[in-house]
Image (cartoon, rainbow, N blue to C red; front, side, top):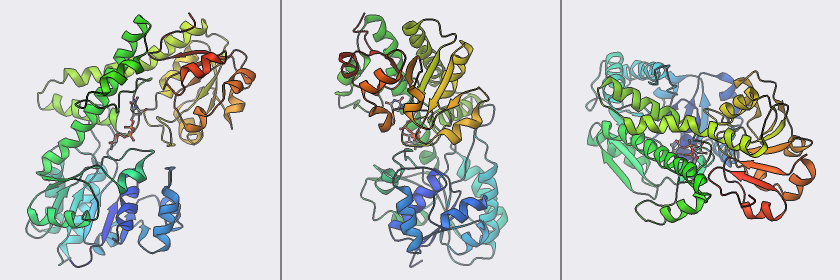
Length: 444
Ligand code: UDX
């Protein structure tokens, strides 16, 4: 294997951004997806989702011939040396992951390897619970190829830790790389692919790599949840939870990251992964009271935010609310598990009407609900003649709104902030009533 060629099955956030990064590191990479329009666009240099800086880099790599798209898994696997499985593992009703796409790709890989003489490494990158690579993927590949893992082909598990909104940075400059390996030869191939990445690398058993991803996401979700619980305690003492967490995060054993209280965590990973590991634990007879509580608190937090809104403005019946930010966090158009949905649903139950604005997420939010939300083209349109404003995701564009704009456009100069998007003092000294999760009420 002189020059390593890579195929990536599944062109979601993980597949495409990793593919772009491998291409940038000098590996010819082909990404496949079942949706033909996604592939047509990729081959024109257009990614299927919004992610800062991604379009320029993808365009560049496509033009250089280093990155391409295909709908044909078989051809992509055959013409490559290493195949990453990056397909989706969406949650089933019981919280466990739907592994249909993983099984289908394993079958495709096995079918190709049957007639391929060269050594090929199969890598799972989709988030999958411990045992999935060795107990599900491996037997399928062996069955369809009639070959043996560790002997005729290689097998690894390589979890991905990128954050949406920072996916380009995280895939080019990860803070660590975990290589779960079936045998040394398989791991050595991945180590070669990552030789140009300047970060610590950890090699371990496949099951360890699989569980690291769940443990890392569970810990981050727990940190956020702790900050969220302390936000409610802080409110009772009329103190600022951000000041409390600043002091907490100064402990080097804790660090300041992911202690930002808000209206709960969303996205494609934290809710899904915590639910999946809880579901798996139940199946194998392990109790998870900590993670059960994390999930419970995450449902409470958006409702608590609505309570703050009601405490501030009173009865919501007949009120028009400027709702800023629909995505699960800034810099992404992704609305999976966005806290905007339960909050807006509750606001409608209380009789309010919502004028919503998001810089990118309108198209992905709209299909989530039939509520008569007015979707506005700009934050100015959302604020105009609304009774007050609510902030759900702290896009820079929303953070840049001036107190003057709130004062002139809203009927009442009231901003209720679910993400601590502003320095409260800036708004308060400009005559705005400011309320936020875990914030002391200076004007009481
Ligand atoms: C997360 C992990 O960070 C990443 O390592 C993993 O690969 C995928 O899951 P992502 O979901 O893209 O990444 O976003 P992240 O920045 O982690 O935020 C997740 C949610 O937590 C968002 O809803 C965000 O608003 C919320 N959050 C984050 C907080 O409420 N407070 C914080 O301090 C940080």
